[in-house]
Image 1: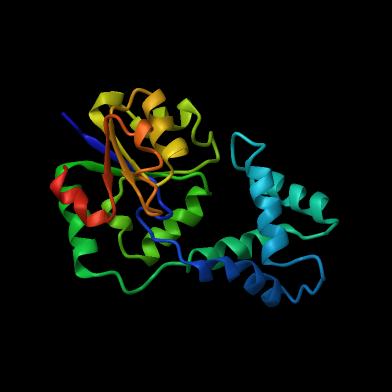
Image 2 (image 1 turned 180 degrees about the horizontal axis):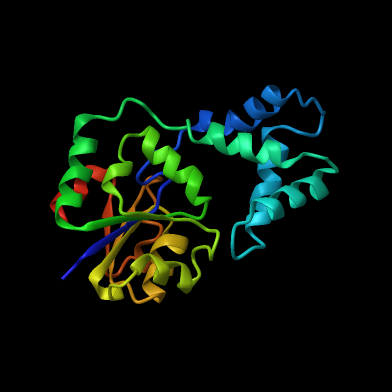
Length: 218
C-alpha cells in the first residue's frame, strides 16, 4: 500500500518558465554589479558545471566555484539575494484543477518534495505557489543529491521504499535513481515528449503529461 508520494519540484510541482533564467541578471542589477563576464549565461554555466561535480549542495562551495571559474569576487550577499529572487519564480495563474489535485492527493497520502536545489528556497517557492501546506517535508540537496540512492532513502522516511511513489520529470535522475533505491511506484512527467525515445527504459513506469493526471493514478 502506498503511503507517501515523493515529488520533484521544478517542472513537476512548479512548471519552469524560460523567463525565470533572468533572475541572475536581476540579482546582479539589484546589487549594482556590472562586470562584462558576469551574467545569466556565464553564472548559470558555472552553476551547471559545479552541479556535475558535487554530491551535495552547499552555498559557500557554489559561491567559491563561481568566483574561481569567472575570476569574480561575488559575496554571499549575491547567493542569498539570488535565492530570494528565485523564490518569486512561480506562476501565479495555476488553474483550479492544479490545487484540487494536491488537495486530493494530500488527503490520501503524505506528500513530500525531493529537490536537488536548496530546501529553503524551494520551500519558499511552494509557499509562493500556495501549495506548501500540502507537503509534510521538503528535502533539499544539502545532505545528498539525486540520483544518489541515499537521497531517495531520506525522502522515504520511516516508510518502506515500496510504500512510496516517486514523481519526477528527469528520467535518469528522478525515476531511474528512485528505482535503484527500491521505489517501485514510478511516475515520469514527460514534459519534452521523449516517451518514444526512452521507451526501452519505461518498463514499470507510468507516464503523464499533466500533474492533474495523478488523480487517476493514486
